[in-house]
Length: 101
Image 1 (cartoon, rainbow, N blue to C red):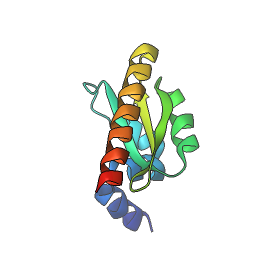
Image 2 (image 1 turned 135 degrees about the vertical axis):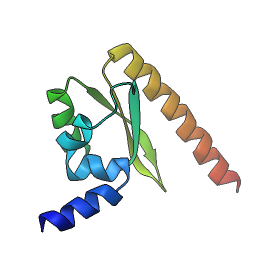
Image 3 (image 1 turned 180 degrees about the vertical axis):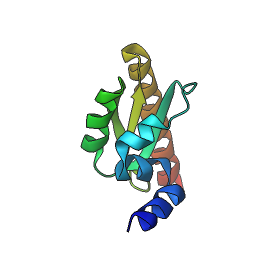
Image 4 (image 1 turned 45 degrees about the horizontal axis):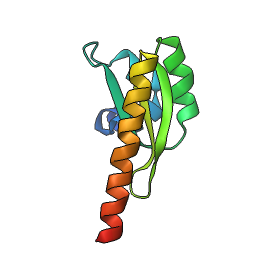
């Protein structure tokens, strides 16, 4: 069973890894990464709980029909807010493009 989980974890997207094992995902992040956007997050409460342990902040950034919920993870509150706003603008642009198509 553990081997199956490991194979599933290795093949997963970042959002899936964060969901499967939030603490492991956050501990394995490259320290040079300033922030990360996860798209397609189903249950971000588990990720938020783990993020607090590692000193990260997490904020909901909206939803897209295709990608589902989006969250941003950062260590700096001001930067987090800026990134969330950028993601929301990008999401609105993507929604507008889909409506036009």
